[in-house]
Picture 1 (cartoon, one colour):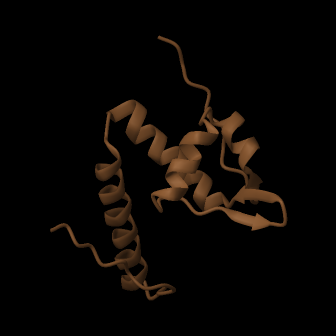
Picture 2 (picture 1 turned 90 degrees about the vertical axis):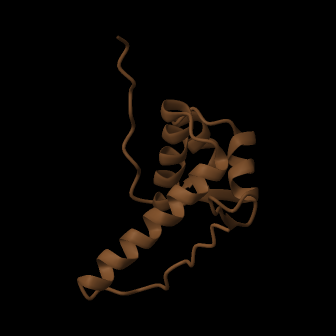
Length: 106
């Protein structure tokens, strides 16, 4: 069995090109994730970058797609439920910082 080489998420924002090469995600796939609202990019002049949180999100999305075969609709639901779970966990610990995303599954 071939072991996958995983790279840790960097502590700072990184250019989209770096993320694409390092995590083997095509720029087209990243563009689709941005268009679908699953990932947000940072723009500084002509440079587009991903924050560490967004890089982790890309890694999670790709693992769900490649390893588990989850489609984009399923990924969106998983990400929203994860966000809600983390929000409730932080709230129970008294660390509220942002509002919870309402989930409309109808």
